[in-house]
Amino acid sequence: MSVMFLADHCLDETTVHDGEDAYHLVPVRSRPHELDQAESFYSGEAQRCDYRFRYVDGSTRRVSVWMAEMDGRRLPVRIQIRVPLLPDGTLRLRIDKVADSPA
Image (cartoon, rainbow, N blue to C red):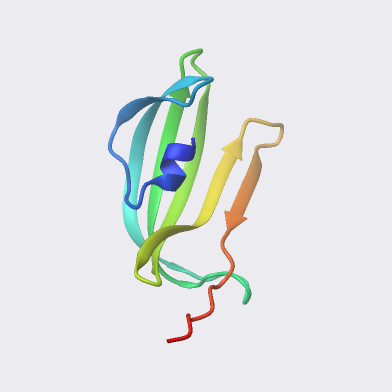
């Protein structure tokens, strides 16, 4: 899954191998999104990339990655992974606000 977090754009359909498992990545949609999070996390304009990926054993997982421009770079500012538990669990990773660099 790390390939989704390292790319600076939404990915096209592809098959990837992470060294342990192979999976087929299918983009579900990509859209502009206004991200409104807690004060200590990034909020603002972002591109939301929604994916579904299927392992070779047939199991699937859904992942959403929000990409935003920060200090001249596009970075993932929020990652949401839905895991198959009862009920469905959700893991959310968010990036802290970055203070402006001194000139």
